[in-house]
Length: 418
Image (cartoon, rainbow, N blue to C red; front, side, top):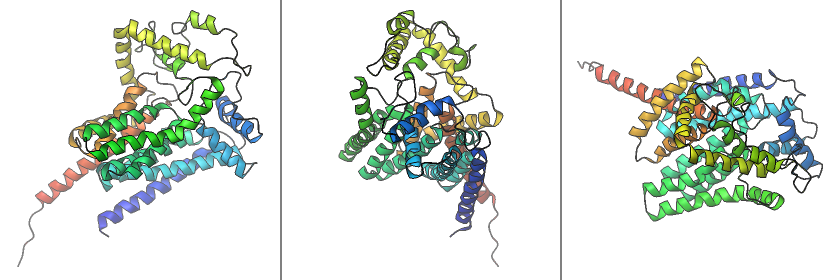
């Protein structure tokens, strides 16, 4: 093994060790071992797990019929089924394990994007990422979401490089699981097959394009069917996007003045008197306040605003596009994000036509999708964008290091023979 490879593998081992220490420190730094910390965790996930384990079905502890994504509750169900007295601290410790494994997945993605140097840089950027570390100590879905998202990206890059239907099927399964943690990436089920066909019209490309959504549907389909049977409509994973879109896009909103979702939602302009009146006091068949239909109504309300005021929407969208990278403020994260944008542009030009070029379009998807919403004070909405930018910052570091090595070799004087 060459000295360079020894350095890379030693660097990866050190990144895993440092990342593990930082994540274990986050486990109980915010909340005690017996504290679940937030009402969202109790209502959406712990309450659902307890209901399921008690034989009462998959019922969130909520006054409304809101449908949260199921994967985080499934994680708690699995842990409590194996060990009924598991503490919240232990659950967060398990999250620390998944987050540490994500460092290895980041290395894998980086290697697929540009080689061992890029992989090592990606591993270290993720190991030290304060946003990722913070969420290890909170029993929300972020930690498992990133683990599954990275596993999806790694298998996708291998599938496209090898043109392998098996790897593509695995990629579809992992995208489905990631979407069951947070629904943001689910529309990639349409984008990835389009990428396959756009690159090549050969028979193998059509096979890859067909296998991917089928595998995705096998994972997500049962959950959507469950919700359709229970609530009477096809709901995509969860039911909150309509209201979030309405709160982030309305005529009275100035995105340059109102930076955060927490402030935008307090404004009256996003609310519809007609929707409020229509759903006032309405209950579903289980006697819970009707949330899901209300969310569908607010999604239609959002689209009506876009159709009626496209220029206002576009102005705010462009401002929010910048806010995705700027907020919440943080010098290190902003620096990495800006370097990531440079790396994204370099990657988009240099890797055009290569199978790994799909990473460019995945990044564009996440950036474009995040700008539809307002950033939040905790940085939850745009954290996936900033994490993805870390991969492109790693690509930039790797390519600059490669150029520096080439110049050093060129500048080195030839050896003198006697």
